[in-house]
Amino acid sequence: MPADVFGPGYSFLPRNEILSFEEIVQVVRSVCPLGVRRFRLTGGEPLLRRGIDDLVGMLSAVEGVEDLSMTTNGVLLSHHAESLVLAGLKRVTVSLDAMDPMIFSAMNGVGAKVERVLLGISTARAHGLPVKVNCVVQRGVNDTEILPMARWAASQGLTLRFIEYMDVGETNSWRHEHVVSAQTILATLRREFRLVPLEAGHPGETAMRFQFGDGPAEIGLIASVTMPFCCGCSRLRLSADGRLFTCLFSAKGHDIRAMLRDGASHAELRSFIVGLWRERDDRYSELRGTTVRPKAEMSYLGG
Image (cartoon, rainbow, N blue to C red; front, side, top):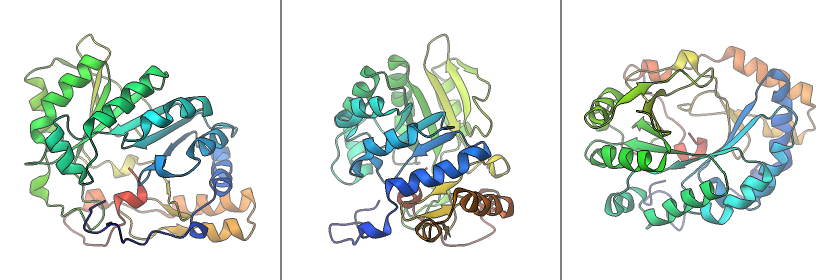
């Protein structure tokens, strides 16, 4: 969230425009009978939501929810790790784009310290919460951190994902020349590490996965720019203000908040979501460069 856009004077949504925990749970209850089993809380930053531990507990109690995870910047994770585990969170993904304090500080733009993120990761693991780390690589910004990040992940036995820099939203000044391709990242890693290919972990897997030799650490590469996977996408996103998005690169979502507040039944919500999913034709990553359209911000839709 660029500080020049989302500064101290930015006007965020009033509380009554944000879905309540009960409304979020109602959407989850509606889709579980369709076979949806994996759910992820993203942001913005989900640990800023007051009572987030309660939401985790409510969601983990829903019949059919088999995998409940969260993506966070990790700054507040050390304060929440124990309560999140007790509430039923199964996994956490931490966004960490650099080990170098200067590069990390320059990228986050709000003075956050890499030490707080590392503390969050170690605290989560101490409480038995599996951790995956996401690193978005930008040419000329943090591409020198590829090997240091990999060395650290290997030493910690962590799962690390390198992600190609994407043109999500309208405020990150994205240009194609800023992208470091997954193949370039892989070639850099192979200078130092023996990487053993792994099978996809589940249907809709977005990462090419590798094991660090014989160790427990794992490396993944998500090539959403150079090798789009629109045809295999199985992700539906629910925004904080109650809109459903069938693509990370959508400009406008489909309002479900009005249905929730008008008393729609689970069957009615389910029918709406099924119709929306069947009619989707999102292929932005495959069409990149041939079409121009406005896009919602990553801070609005999550990853």
